[in-house]
Length: 296
Image (cartoon, rainbow, N blue to C red; front, side, top):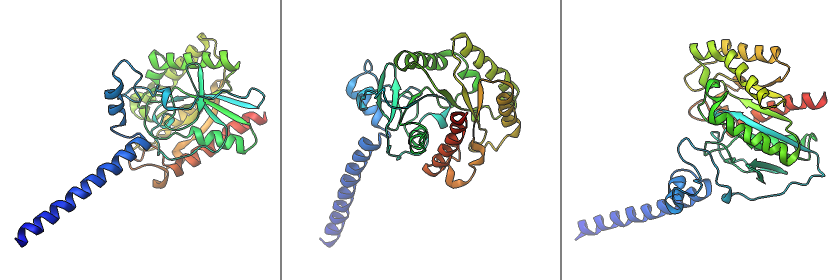
């Protein structure tokens, strides 16, 4: 009898922990939108509705965000963001916007919150912090971002194709709605940290610039210097080419050097994507780059 009661009590404890754990995990999934949120959303709404996230797809579900019209009388910064994962929702989630920071997607504007619309990851991005800091530093009264990045892509893949087409659609949409774009914030390089990537980077980025020109785009491109990611160490050959591009083309401006963010506390466990602490420093770098242009 004692053995039975002991086993029953152990079983009861196990069931209680299982139910409690499932409840907490369910709340976490709904709030933080981690796995399996996208799968559940897709099962509920069907494949014909815009999914929240599909593997390799963009976050296009505007229904989960708050639409907001922009006050045209305020001094406004308008930026397109482009590149790979560190520009597209793969950082640590948890930053809350403090000021009038917005995001634009396909003709509509929304309050900015992570994961940002248009990106491919399910975490956080630096852009909300950049917007807050631009406002807190008195550069703008409100800021709008349009995220067109795609995680894991090389410059060869980003210079044309559907990734590039999405950038162009958003650029032209911003021009139609607001009349201008103040810059393209381009963070990329980690996927080109290889012999082949370094060899082709200059010409591929030049092709990207030529493709922008063909579309009539003359907005400055702020280029990050980036090579560090996981087991791929800092590659000065790659960042030297990025610096050369900044020197050679008037359209290309100096963005952050994120290889300087090499502390373990700056990165997540994969030692590639940024923690909240790393994104804070990353945002400060963006403010420095954008402030220099504003002063000019």
